[in-house]
Length: 114
Length: 112
Image (cartoon, rainbow over the protein chains, first blue to last red):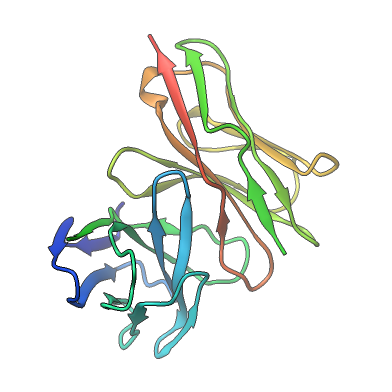
């Protein structure tokens, strides 16, 4: 998990509240990613960013928003519009989004919404 | 569209025996293939990747993977399994300019 930090490890929220998950990296990577992991479904891409102030939607972007104001940081906001937000969220980074570069993952944040 | 499949939800092996975790892929051009491992409530750790060249790729913790273009497979292997290898394993693929696509994962259980 070295080089990428996610906080907090566990997060609890009431339905209807927005919540922001933190992701910071000190690897000097240009690209950063957010994935959602649900049991038996693998990892699904929410958003990714190739460079500061630029980001693209992944496969399941609805109900989520991101920002990339600094190279080191890529926070994810889970909005009240996300119908089923309870999941394990993983942040990752890589040298570049171009093919062949492995991604490095943070330890994850487990979000529970009740 | 590119995709990756891991046909087995779970693989069970005895400690000391060889292990194989299967992965097949579908891409229209040359694939870039990866294996990751995840321990409970942790992030994913990179094990190895195939970009080009030798079809047998060696990675971390004694794991290796064999790229087979004709069968569009990239199976993960280890000659002698350890109980500590028990974890969730993910295969992933991408092509030029796209983000990684992950398989659904295979749970490896190594019994002592």
